Length: 273
Image (cartoon, rainbow, N blue to C red; front, side, top):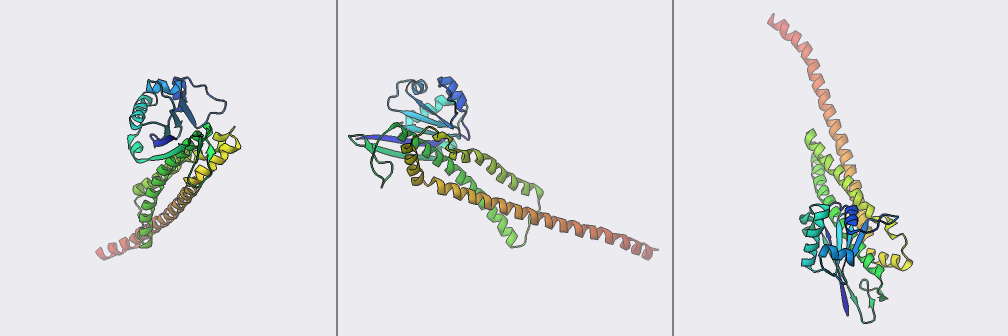
């Protein structure tokens, strides 16, 4: 029995694939995908020894999937790749991780996930698993971001319920910027669901992808993130409208106060005289 191990890590918000392709002398395809694969002599150059049976999938959105790597090899590869793409984020590396193990019997058959039929192992299976793991890790990072913003939104809702509105423009602008930044940074993560990466794949590969995507609940998680993001924007718009109305009312009261000073000044002048 042969065991294939897949380990994926989030190491950066983005990875410049063009730099890696240029250094490793990988020919750029007509349709530039969201990832590149290093194996054979291309991988040997980074590990500085012959790496048989190993491969690395590097994704533009900051995830890297290692096939048949141990921990020391992962660290060594990341240190070498930093010389090309710049510093990596090891806080992300420690927090966002996903793994999958594939067992091949003596005849080369494997079971993608529990409960599924056995099928003969082909190269596209490694591609499918690596892509799904990379998506899952990227989604995990976005899920953490949106959960944090949701906690912040709950504080806003609490203030609205008790009738207190934070009219501090600086604090409010800071909250808005967090949500807008989240929206902007999530665009690249959402792009990982583009099916352009599957151009040229056969029916078997697409079916394998659907099985793996279902196992890691990619579709449901994406919908959950989208729903929460929509809720956040609705809360923000409601809070902005109420805060603006509250500020407008305060301005009216201030104007009334100023207008009241005019007759009061005449009255005080009369009394003094």
